Image (cartoon, rainbow, N blue to C red; front, side, top):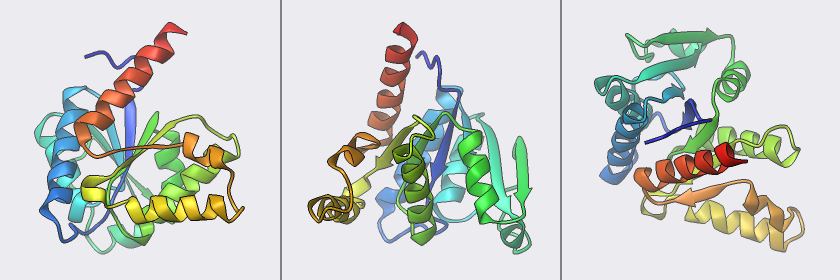
Length: 191
């Protein structure tokens, strides 16, 4: 498979596994696919929850991995060991900025308030025209449907333009997500 312009992918996801096994399964599959495509995984640096499952899978499949973790979480000893690169930041803001800077595309797996924060910040930056990176919600078992309904409500209520939906897409499988990113690469390489 050809990857052309996309060399690294940031993945935002939960530091917990969630209640459905399908979330962890998707994280594992995504990690393996990123490795298979010889992309660099950029993620939150943790060794717990979906973050840990994603990174372990990527690592077991020979993926180059950059973990970015804030000092206060590193001090709690939840950082993943033996990464190609582990960057310890002073705070969460610096972590998000570095994850953005080190990636060519963003994938959002299920997660909690931190994952929402990461998604909305990167979406806001896209809305303001600060980047044109692909943003994908990996909507495993319809996990993100309530969020999508909220965004539709915000558009209908006049707080967002309908064009917000052009700034991200969603898929229900890791394979479809990676196929979309590869198709985007092929389109980019012919322009």
